Image (tube, rainbow, N blue to C red; front, side, top):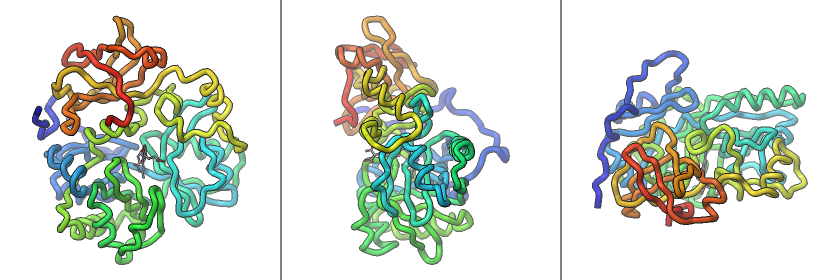
Amino acid sequence: MNSLHTTIPASSSQITLTMSPRIRRSAFYEASVREGVTHFTVYNKMLMPISFGNLEAELHRLMHGVAMWDVAVERQVEVSGPDADRLVQHLSARDLSKMTAGQGKYVAMCDYQGRLLNDPVLLKLSDRYWFSLADSDMLLWVRAVAGEGQFDVNVCEPDVSPLAVQGPRAEDVVARLFGEQIRAIKYFGCIETDLQGIPLVLCRSGWSKQGGFELFLRDASKGDQLWELVKAAGQEYGIGPGAPNHIERVESGLLSWGGDTTPDSNPFEANMGKYVDVDTAVNYIGKAALQKVVADGPARLFVGLILDGTAPSAWPLIERVPVSANGNVVGTMSAVVYSPRLGRTIGLAQINRQAVEAGGRLEVHAPNGVQGAVLSALPFA
Ligand code: THG
């Protein structure tokens, strides 16, 4: 078996980033530095840790133990006020009529042409909504739509900083902190609570398929304190720092908006079709365009690729690379990684629907040469 890179390989993807007031730091920034963070990316104009220098250990904790991740870059757009229900529905390509407080849902936010603007987790709290966002400027969009439509709402980015606890032992750590009753929380269920006076929302969610929770800290000045409480509770389960894991997310086929999508992708081209309601009485922005996509069939599909050989293909990709069939370009690959669990090099790609339906062999024009590939359903088995 190939050994994993234990550090992210040095390449032109490694540069020095000079800080400025435009690039924000997280409530857990000091804690991440103390823990030995080695690599950051920028997400929602904020620094996001992506490695602590040992990807192998970080993956192992996520798959077999428990990891804690600074995901404060998952910024919230908060909507409250008399027209909040109506505005949130207008912005979401999903029937929310049965949604109750204490629930979360994965939603596609689209423009009038059905293009995917963001794929947040939407949380409904007792008196407000939070769109927990991927990496795009939704505060601008939500305020514009609210203003143009004269919705009576307040729209802001609140002081909220998610900390993820992920992995098979995550529930044990969170039960230790909050009590055994948290084991009954359903997927995307959320409760407004506190931890030794630190206000937060606890939600069963997170950007992995290994299970876990996110603690939405509601006071950035308590970031350090919360980090240390979670770390202490996780000691006996071997908790350690990590970040949304590239290998696990490719294996699981979790969408990275802006990485796997282009500005023209619609949700059906992002494998989000099952979360989009087109046959519904409710109305929302983009509905007619999305109905047309369903009627015509999407132009492209988001699929997995299994590459020939087991070379640990160049990672991170610094740009999408072409994928061809019989010499004709049929799509692009947006992520690639060697999966130790599958013993294969796997990727994520947007491929023309006809080429997916035809099946057969593909060629990936990877940075380290042309490699043959075949399609795979997502998630990878
Ligand atoms: N948590 C929170 N905010 C987020 C993310 C998160 N914002 C950015 C980004 N992640 C948004 N994108 C996703 C993508 C996938 C999922 C969640 C957010 C996800 N998908 C599951 C799946 O595809 O299997 C479950 C979806 C479902 O069953 O409804 O969890 O992670 N706070």
